[in-house]
Amino acid sequence: MREFKGRVVTPGEVTAEALVTTQGFNTLASFQMALQFGDKEVKCGDQNNADINGKSMINKALCLPQTIGSTTGGLVLYCACAMEKNPACMLFANHIDSLAAAGAVLADVWVDKITMPVIDCLGDEFLNYVKDGMKITVKADGTVIVEE
Amino acid sequence: MILTAEQQAILNGEKGETLAKVMKTLVMYGDAFEAEKLVPITSNYNHLVTSFGLKVMSPVYDLMQQILDADVTSSQKFSVDPRPLDSNVPANFLQNFVFKNFMYTKQDFYEEQLKKLGLMDEDAFTCACYMDEVGNKPKKGDVLSWAESSAVVYANSVLGARCNRNSGIIDIMGSIVGYVPYFGLLTDEGRKATWVVKIETTKKPEAQLLGSAIGMKVMEDVPYVIGLDKWLGTELNDEACTYLKDFGAATASNGAVGLYHIDNLTPEAVELGKKLIAEGAKEYIIDDAELERVKNDYPVIWKNPDAKPKLCFMGCPHMSLQQLKDWTDKVEASLKENGNKKVLIPTVFTAAPKVLEAFNKTEYAERLKATGVITSYICPLMYMNNPLCKKMPVITSSNKLRTYTSARYYTDDEILAAITKGGKLK
Image 1 (cartoon, rainbow over the protein chains, first blue to last red):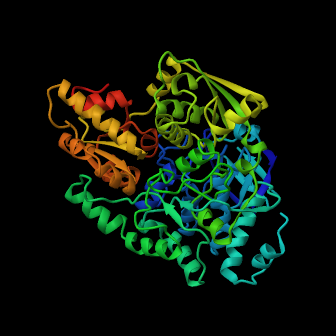
Image 2: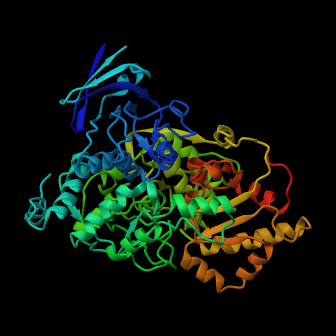
């Protein structure tokens, strides 16, 4: 078990299974097909991301360096939250990027029924350590506990 | 974040609950980047990324309706990304059925919302809003609240405006209150390059391939590119701007680049030169072998990798007037050289409605039509964004389209050969 301390972007507490991408998470490419065609498992559709392409993202602790790609990214994330198809939390190794921040904030301010904690600045060591399937617990103060 | 009395009053709800939520969104967004203040937007127009009335995006339209119901509108008129549908573009019965009955059922509703919120005019649908014909071209130093990654990177890099890579919805919220949080690419520090990219190729690099390589390497960082002026010159003429439009779109979609500097060419690089390079900047050298490596690493996701292409899309981002003219010449000449009269693969060139209007007034329009190439204002990405098109072998020289769809990337020369000469593509 290891503990990492990050910065709280949007607050909340959750326990979930890790889903890890070591490369930039392309929000539009990852979510577009799953949202559009009602995939209940919300499988990642980003053909350029060998880490998570085809894997279910719903209710997972999505561990990532940052998001990349289209500036629809924030609104796609907002829609995923409003439709309750979002990851349980998003855990960034780096400082959050502007698109993911927009999506997280839009969901926090405009969606009543959902809480998706977002923590950033967890460091490269976090992303080196965490692997798919590990148990992740997010605390309100930005502490992230990773258990094998 | 320190707010002015006026901003604080809006946040406190003195101008209504909805406007307070808009302000709260912008403040929280800025707080995520330790922004100390909100600064006024100074451009004439905004540009929004969300142009499509996708049924699945209902939460977006619900949010827009909350804004409209509260009698809140944008303080700026705006252009918006391209429309997703155009009957000019080939589609079979099933595709048309799915487009109209399942996917874009909210298109008319959403376009009405856009008009009420402040759409510039009925033809203001393009990702390349900065074209002269469209008229949304910010000045150097203007502060923007734009979204659309290819437009943001162009405005920052080629025009010298200042804009973060804002998301859809955040874009309109900025112009509703008239302010954006001051961080990142709005600041002098945030515009410094943390990568130096040296171009050491033996020929002019393909714009969208070079942009892809740089985007995937630097991700969201700012690159300072040395050696490209050898191929582009030192003047921001039409040819250079067109190259940088396509190059930038690839840096932004294959990575998350919001600003690049080209030594001796882009405005800030001309003004400040290597002073723009931050201490400790990393280095990336690009030669012919590196570009070849990047191209060969693209995944091929066609069910049958040897399938004959059924469609070719050019113009993601939308083509310029000069690009349409140049491609007319190229297609005509290559068809003649190869003894063909019409393109061998259904081919669509996309451009802004107002660019197409200008093109249609030239003699090139009839010549291009005679080659069989179709012109359209469509967004190829939106057209291909469904499982039916995923099964369809589509070729393109757009690295953005490749990134988001099953379209397969080829260089401009390879595309020209495929549509005019035929034969097997590698």
